[in-house]
Length: 189
Image (cartoon, rainbow, N blue to C red; front, side):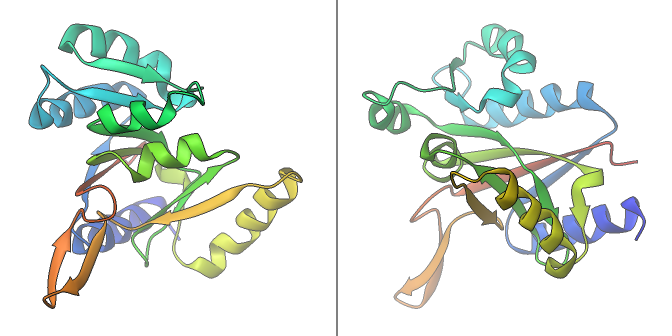
């Protein structure tokens, strides 16, 4: 599989599930895309929870945009309040499954998982080289992830915004999690 083929299929599949996908040539392209997304949310009152891997690139952005940036590790005693105040969670994906339109998030504690599942919007950064075509192709990588975390980890598949159709048989986004889900694919040449 070529990287371009995987990126194209992932983009089509993820967007079919009401998510948004942005393709950037390199890591320098990530921050402007996040800035645009934050502007759409409400930059003057936005609170962003950020996983540890993405903090350095976002510090300057958030200061310039008047966004309150809350970075992992989060204090356990105030985590519920932090989650309640956050409009956006920003995380990094371990990989993605193109045909399913799903990013794969790996966490060893709940705080990072909460960053992607509870705020109204989720932004995920993904390397194009980490996209596989099928779940079967992802299996060896997932097995390796479990093996490298003997104390345990959680693997979450995220395929677009939260959705339910059990309320009057109508599809509603954002009932049990983010109503907007964005993926920024890096090195998508």
